[in-house]
Length: 465
Image (cartoon, rainbow, N blue to C red; front, side, top):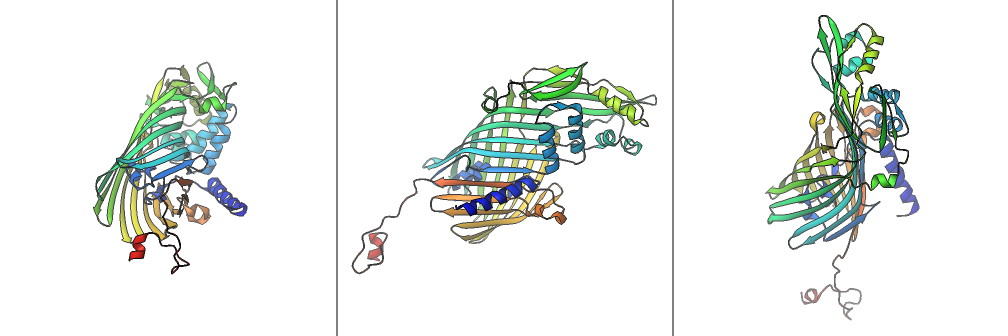
């Protein structure tokens, strides 16, 4: 790629990352010739080239989130420098103002794929970081606005969970796929080892109690935390959180103490010559956290307040943030992702497909659905687009795959509508990558013949014919 082309590509990627609001990747689900399509379903490994290799920074990256302002606020207020109660309160306010906040980033460090007579194998290493939370509810709306009208919607004695999970880990995985019934059924399995870097998992809940005309606010539950930070508290109240004074990025990224394991499982079944069904479950696993554990237990003491006095409510909220430190080891289950898809080959170069994705994690379950069409212009270019529903957002995904004799490049977004302010769409995202196909078979040619001076036949059979 020349310099101008590289600058255009970098500009496009920057625009998508800065202004996108999304989850990514659904747009490429049915393009089985994508070199890392087994990320959706390990059974798709049977479609890979004979020998495939890709390394960082070309091996593939994906970033997406559904609220740029909220995520940027978290990065500036929570992940940088010293964090006080005021900073944390600002983040809480921004999160309460919307239903579900979701962000995920994947970065492949190494990808190796190889086909053998006994099946298709691949090995990859990648970094994964994701965050999800849903804090909106009747109680949180009242705590935020302190309005008597909001208080009327709160049911005394009914708890509101404040679920949240942020996790960063490195994944080493070995995948295998085999065609069990020729041109009919393929199965795939991937074994994974996780090395956790940091984790925040909230099991905190809150509720309002009523007794003899008095109202009490109670917060209880555990906030499990494993990160290179120091948590400062006095009089059983959280004061601030800040990075270790001796924090080292290399030590953080290479931390081997938080081990975990998991697996992926998938099938690809041809119902009819032109109709294929696929299903998979991804990231069924758990990570055990043993280093930098700074968990907090919210004590849960009911605090008296007056609904008509906002200042008294603020004082009660402060009192309910009483905590006790907990440095015991803990484990977290990774959010499992379920895929189910149908693909119909309408014409030799046109396919239609539908895919449903369900992400399961306690109180943060959410579903996405997409209808896609794939068009193969020629052996070098494939374009896919369609319509998807992610939460309450309308999305137009678009993906492009460019193939050449010894490699492949892809780039795509889950929502081009995010660039149109009037479209009212929340989600978008970017995914891109490059790979090299090694040791491809070369076509043997014969020497030029006198009666064919401008043509080299590929083999003697062609001459005979």
